[in-house]
Length: 371
Ligand SMILES: Nc1ncnc2c1ncn2[C@@H]1O[C@H](COP(=O)(O)OP(=O)(O)OP(=O)(O)O)[C@@H](O)[C@H]1O
Ligand SMILES: CC(=O)N[C@H]1[C@@H]2OC[C@@H](O2)[C@@H](O)[C@@H]1O[C@H](C)C(=O)O
Image (cartoon, rainbow, N blue to C red; front, side):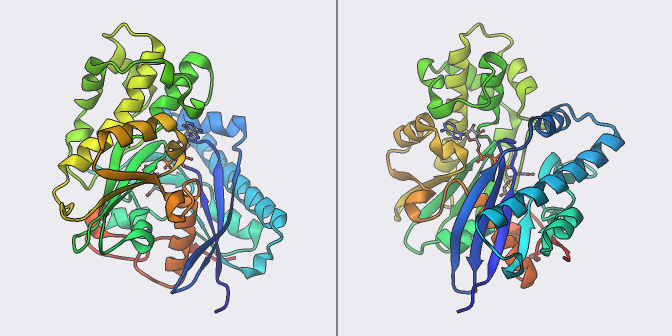
């Protein structure tokens, strides 16, 4: 069968880099070929952080950063193509998520904003680009997120297992695949975003590599309870969230009445990431108790040994593992998923799941920007 090559590009809520994946996708098979991560220059990262967390920007600045990011995506894709000796004529399409700067799925006028002008990407790479994946789902009454559960279903569903795929990025989201039941998927709450913000505020490091700092602290149960009373955790799905809610301001307000060592707060934040998901899994009514339970973890959090250790401990009846063990890269899962979403759009295949996002019908997500 002929190769059908797609490129997926993801830069997520952590702002830790731009993930690019080359994927061969046919009706029968999805084969990940190669993935690379490229840095986001400090000036762009700090502008994005200000916009994402403080929600402040002039219209001029916003227009300019949309353009700057479009250029940055195009430049990194061209670098990726050159480095890996790919002929851009062999790529059918690029699926680029863009950078979420505001996600507000509830209220009278729900909206979600991903920037990084895809016109520029198509023009500068010479490759048809698909972007703006979330807004049509939202126009149909959906959350516009998470979108990756459809891809998880395409590759991980198993007639003999309860399988939950957990992506621990800046925000965590789960996909619950139970044989003969509707697919469920939603954001469970913070993944790494609070861990990254807290270590940055205290030790000026962008993240706690291998949980070295968190391992020196202790879980504080009262603080954990205080975290867990947040309304978001009680809301029923469909639901999605972001830095709009879970940010350093939220954390500072929660810890304001506590007098704890900073490392104890870091350890308690790890526990929040784990417990907020474990609570959902243990309460899930759709899981079939007569089938084995598997938790497949991906995203940057899959590399955090303390997170994995705590899931193992709190879910004794589950097989806890990473998606790498099941043959799909934990690092490039989302980039691969956006390559697949581009494939779906080019072939006009439905790619949202109404039981996940709450949209009133299935459609093919994304807008095509021709080369
Ligand atoms: N070795 C490690 N030890 C601990 N944490 C790690 C390690 N490697 C990565 N991480 C965490 O993973 C984060 C990046 O995760 P990822 O790339 O999945 O995020 P993202 O794509 O921005 O997220 P999202 O899914 O929210 O869009 C880093 O910011 C860091 O907190
Ligand atoms: C609005 C937005 O960008 N949401 C992201 C974010 O990062 C993780 C989680 O929150 C998920 O809802 C989503 O990303 C993945 C790619 C998704 O749509 O499945």
